[in-house]
Length: 222
View (cartoon, rainbow, N blue to C red):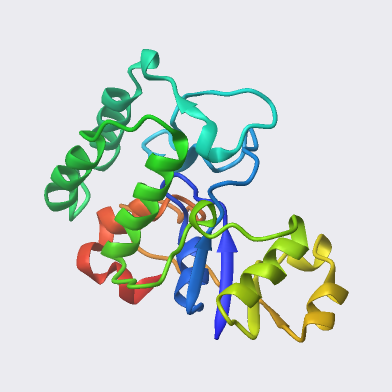
């Protein structure tokens, strides 16, 4: 049994879903501390001018958990996102099929960052044909923090292997896994290239970019 864990991100990149695909259980760490200027409330798409952030504006205080961070609806961000997506991908092969689904996604009233981040993960996972057990940390609290929390999650879900990101060895306390008898493997993701109109390929964008260009074939590419 392989377990992986990650903070919910807004419209994540393809590597996020590769990690989900390689695990049996993918825990969404929604009740850990929110980190400003990372990926939890934003991601990049490709516009005619180059990569651009799609950012969900938030109101937060230092130390708040992702589940506690509120969305700032005074910024009128939803129409801006939809307009940017339309302007950027109107000529993409699968714009007409994907855009109505995104309009429904943005039509939901989200109050907290965790809600829309988790919803976006599930939205994209479904279109990549990923049917996975994705429990929330907030609904499955465990003891410890940092590496100890990951070990505790493996024990809770009876996982004998933890799948870490490629940079995990730089910050994880490996002896804790060894002591618990849990094997650690590291993700080795090679980003695919695909048609992005007639320009040089830009990697590491939101998975939305691939879906606009590949549609139902996206799950075969990432």
